[in-house]
Length: 253
Image 1 (cartoon, rainbow, N blue to C red):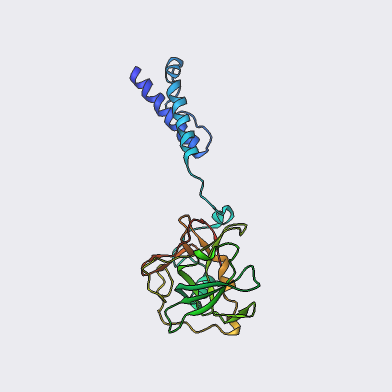
Image 2 (cartoon, rainbow, N blue to C red):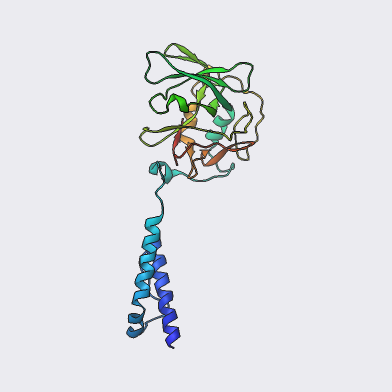
């Protein structure tokens, strides 16, 4: 009987610890009333278990640069579940893997970089990126993700033939490049998991669809592992996912 009382008291302590961990109200013991002597002898074990739970909760790291508002609305989805508008717009856009070949500051601009980007074509593209205040010029290197079929436009009088995709935190005080794996072929089209699309170049958007990427932005977020998604479905290449450095549930634009 003594061992039974000790066991049930320890089980009660474990249940209380789990309830504390989950943040739910304490339930009635499934073992009925336990004699006071037994409760007294196991008080230390109960207190220790609860303390251990609190310590474990305190030890859970808070995600760096997590956008809590986006986290609340984020949901992992399959291709069949994603928003039809998001799927249609993604198919019309041509997201490609590019590589920053050269970057320079635009004169008289505190925002713009003028970038030469290799996207697997005969010549590098010139694309302007307004991230001077967020990303040092020496960090503007390597492989990135580019929207390659947007209509060309001038920024500060400089022609720009596309858009560099970035992730940003809630108050837009930190911006990070979206990166494919280093061994991803230049010019490869970025897809959605399970959504097979041809690798052929997508024609430049006409005036009718010139701003269609704006329709996709509300659906583009990073997940809890900093991976780029569209309405909860991962963006991918033949070599893996697209990621930023450490912004979780971040907006992408």
